[in-house]
Image (cartoon, rainbow, N blue to C red; front, side):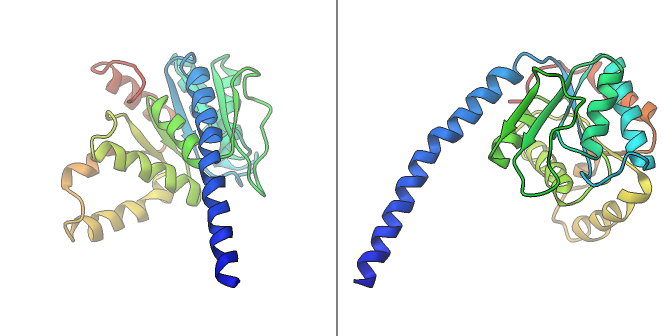
Length: 228
């Protein structure tokens, strides 16, 4: 009897998984249709926990404002902290301000600086991550936590393995990122797990001027288009 119940539960799980495909497809279709019209954008990542009076928040606002003034839209995860700062800077400059929101049990809520027609909601992290990668012409990565690192290494891996075209990946905050970069060089690179050329995929800066210079210099020789 117990064995039969086990098989019944397993079969129900498989059926639910099959029907979930349609919900996943719906998120992809909605995301592709809405994101394909926004034009060239740069994604800004960082901690949801960074407060408005924090120097990193203020720097993220300035960076986003400069990016928008340079003619790019700004994409964030749509929530508080650095995400809010990114949308806020774009809004202040009158630029495109996109929020890719995710339903989370804590931290996440829409910030008020997203354009009304450019706020998208996702249930699946992996669908949301595709939108970031496909429709960004660069990643600006502010200090953050696991989610920020997840987005950073996803992009590096996809570029390293030639699954997407190369685009600028810019880490902001030498004091925050230098320990990680040193470990990558002294441990991963020394062990032969990555190549010397892989280190060239990452820039580390401290100012908004450097961010825009790197992005503009890159696109003098590259076409602006979706990444795959």
